[in-house]
Image (cartoon, rainbow, N blue to C red; front, side, top):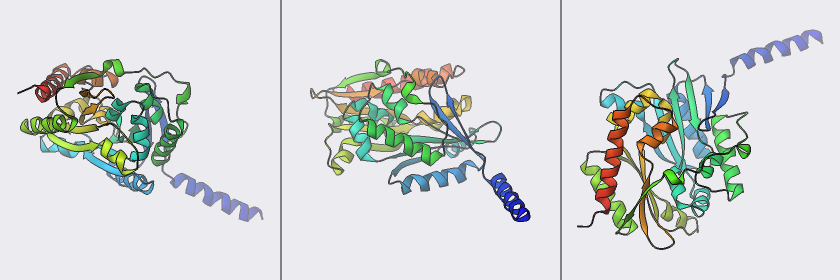
Length: 299
């Protein structure tokens, strides 16, 4: 009996040692949740995509920042952003505040740190909704939190229900457009493409809402970027890849007014404590200001 017990203990110990080591941390200043994994970035990305799709989410974009940087001769450690969503839950959040569409669909960043370790980072729904003063529906927020934790194997994360996350809507830059949402969005695309910037995703939140029988005023997100610029910011802190590429939101209010909304690079750089890329940040701010102004200018 003792011999059998010893053999069982021996093999259990060996198997435990062979399991990938995973740990979870939460960055206090911005509530970023990061899990650590013992497999390469590409392997983890493949694993996460499979898990995400198995839970009924659609991959909207898979952005390989490192590959994009390599094409413009910039060195960047393996870094990928997965953008994915499910219209039912996201729509219910946007029904409370459309501008949360800037942070939807959901995103997960997979990146290699300077020691060669693989990390997986995300903001959970409690943080995202708090940013926009959204607290309902609680069932949706809780379901998203559970899904993200399950997909990334996050454990022992901060109890966000006890955290005070600043409402950032006062930092949102919004410009009124004289055009409809469709026309404004089309104008933005034309301007961005004329500047040789890459459009990674077009997300028509309102159309997605109607596909699941829900109503949402016209709300669209445009995801675009330039690896020559974004890569430089990620060299300072790869975590900012979670907020790159850049995003512009076009939405119609209850009063029928149309706005272009976005957060500028100064705000995003501050979120990740990037202080050594002032010239890059200023260039991005100038580009966002010029693009949004051109889109709302009357002929």
